[in-house]
Length: 340
Image (tube, rainbow, N blue to C red):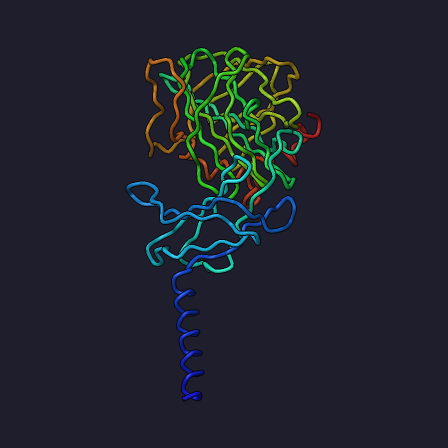
């Protein structure tokens, strides 16, 4: 009897272990990237994106060792998303069917309100005039090379100037490191026509897109203002004009022509808070496959998917020098860039 008893106990233990492994299909550890150690007490939710939106599959809290586990995932049915909340900032990790679901590391970071931990790597303003309007697409790429998340609702993650002629209509999206573009709402600041976007800047690159339209005119004088956040290092503003469009003014200088698209690239030379330049001609880099921006007369700040996405791969290529062609290469090699 004793010989039969122990194997039976061993079999039960094996079955229990197998059962636990089967049910705890997603498990891992929350890691505090600032301290470099596991983080206990973090609330985590497992959600599944679908046509009807996000569906919650379960919620848990990391234990004293930072460990967490979910038993009711849905393998084989598309991606799932781990969402953690720490320091009033949400952190996501996309779980696709082709990656492992055990011993997952979910990184969180200590928050800071100091903008000195981030810097603006690229500032680009694309202007596309036609017979009826001028589409303006502003791209801002912010780098955070620290091990903290910048989160300051009073200052915002970025600021932009919205000309009065835009009639309050603007579309904004923000995309964090390894994240997806999310629509955001602009908030008014104490400065006239200056808006802020509250969005945490996590370690890595964060990208903002701002889109609005202005009434047509040739020539048309574009007036802008410096919107830098105090304490945040900001690079020069680059202006992009499609073929057929020229920019002129004492506050800008032409750097050259981007060889792939033949777009003209300018840099802002004015060091003051306000600048202006004239826009002449018509042209676009837009392929016509998406919808035009909302031009409703209702004076409100709106949010949605900007039409910048029609040529977003090109702009990203320019920003990061993909295939060795783009604005970064042009900026680095241009004699005008060395003088500015």
